[in-house]
Amino acid sequence: MKTIDIILKEAWYTKEYLKQTELDWITNWMWAKWGIQFTDEARKFKAFESKKAQELLDNLDLVSNIHDLEYAKWGWIRAFYKSNLDLINRILILLHWTSILRRLLVFIIMFFSLNTIWAKAFNWKG
Image (cartoon, rainbow, N blue to C red; front, side):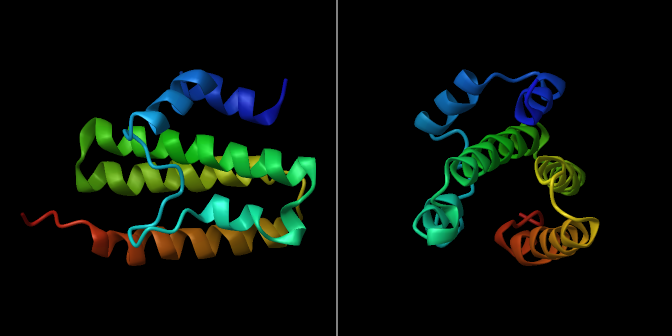
């Protein structure tokens, strides 16, 4: 069983459902506040031309969709941080083939950017 299939099974989602949420604009698949979709931009680089790299980017879109759905389910500040941590963990699982040091670097970058920079996009004070 592929890693993404295990992640989807644990999250109780199917690929078809997650792709439909993209089409319905319920989820935004790695889309930045300022209009840049990170995985589409990465697909343009030579380093991401291989089939394996394309699959990784597709899988990143799927775990991002799960992240969006988890946050949207509750919409609380606590859910924001929990869904961020779950997203980071799922990305690290997808990167199981990399070294521990690289995964630690990804964790630090993702944790910082999601919980500080992205937190500014939300206004919980109303």
